[in-house]
Image 1: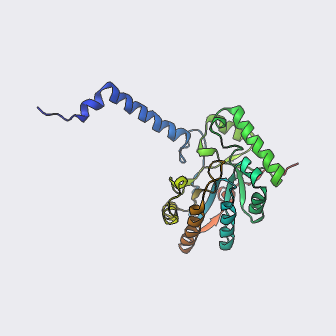
Image 2 (image 1 turned 180 degrees about the horizontal axis):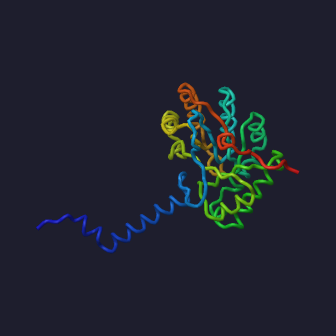
Image 3 (image 1 turned 30 degrees about the vertical axis):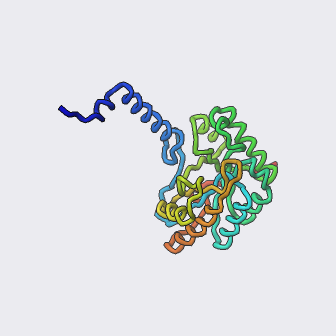
Length: 253
């Protein structure tokens, strides 16, 4: 008699092992990297509000010419945003970072090197965050209070370090999961607009890790998104204002 061949495969030792490994991988991703998980501690991604306001955020910069073009676009539309900057990029483009501050944008910390192996243990986390503080202090005269971990990767050690340093951890929602491949501006803007809700913190990238990279489609998409959301009654704010916290700690020096 004929039987369904899929059922025996799923019940085999290999099938069970694959299912267990897939479940473990999904659980690990949810715990350590999901934008939405609060399993290890508070990691705000969309504060509760009925106010039609959205926070645009940009990771992995500054990265010229794209960050400067993005700043031009936002200035033309009177929009303020939050830039989670990488220390090595600030060292490469200090004038761009200072321009962002001058325009009224908020700069948060996104680690010094954006290196995977330096985002796990407590000692390396402290070094990454501390060194980035030094870069911000030297080039910008301030110490950031907002911190977004690279790839949103967090461990219990990160929450301990954040508490000790009085840092506000920040998550968000990726504007488009394939932004790294730079889909068309229309696709980027359309997906981001579909995700927008009152209180949304939308994640874009003005760089790629700490290595620069082409972000022309992101810049164009942000212009389309701002125009679309504005016509729908949305306003724009920075993450610190959305969360009701200070963007910076004590002045440098």
